[in-house]
Length: 77
Image (cartoon, rainbow, N blue to C red; front, side):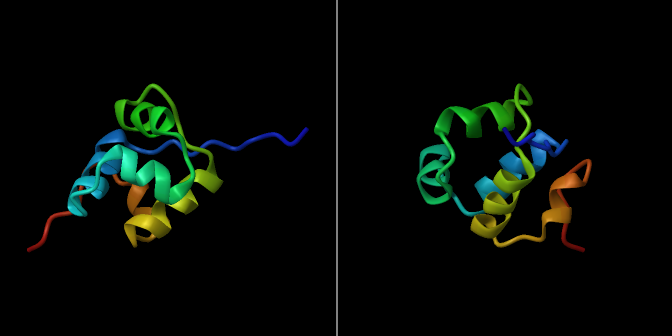
């Protein structure tokens, strides 16, 4: 059995990324093949995504993976 490596990302960044696209958790779940329950857990901080799940989220949100490790959402100057 393969060990999973989890990404310690900030939940606020996951919420911000999803809301930027005006997407619901259900839409993200369907497009990334990650359960809606997991998406909700990531956004609440109750769960952490694996790096593979984070890669899928990054692709869907069209963002570099590194953005998810920021402590707060970036702002435009």
